[in-house]
Image: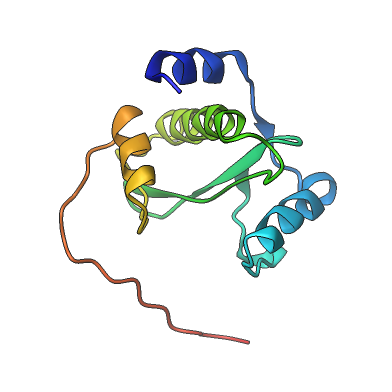
Length: 139
């Protein structure tokens, strides 16, 4: 896939706001295909979806920093279709974060291909030996 094709394709797709009652089951199936557990209560209020294609979410904070997370695409799509759809979702989440006044949008991954996509879409790669930690607060 060429870089320009991906960018052109993403510009022709318009993600819509994620509505849990209409879209959660679809995202649940996509995550189950990746053997990932997802519950509706871990998703933020701000998300975008291309029905049948891909979705992603904006985790807002009470600081100038927001997070992009839970990017997922329909497993039955071709690699190129998934890539174009994810590009459109990343653009929608980024645009919404900017519109809301956030100064920095962060994301994390262990996949080099995701780092390359992020760089292509304007993100900077922050070097480091980062580890993700989690603390279960309430069951």
